[in-house]
Length: 98
View 1 (tube, one colour):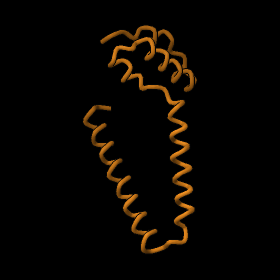
View 2 (tube, rainbow, N blue to C red):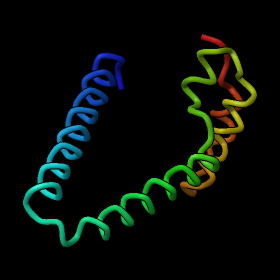
View 3 (tube, helix red, strand yellow):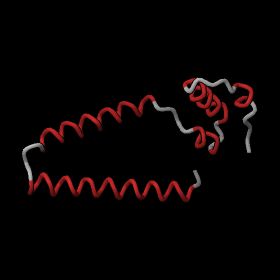
C-alpha cells in the first residue's frame, strides 16, 4: 500500500471512529440510557482484548527493513509465512538492503 493510501485510509478510519463516539454520546446521553452500561462493558472488553493482543503482534517487516533491521525482518516474515502455511525460505533468505 502506498503512503498516500495509508494516509487516506488512516484519516477515514479516524473520522469514522470519531463519528461513532459522537453518535454514541448523543444516543446514550439524550435518547436511550437503558443499554449504556452494557455498551461500556463491551467497549472496555474490546479495548482490553486489543491491547493485550498488541503484545503478540510482531513489528511490521516493512518498518524493520526501512530502519535497517534486516535479520529481524526476515524472522518476522518467516513467522508470517509459516503461519499462513507456505514455505518461502529461499526467497526470504535473499532479502537484502534495497
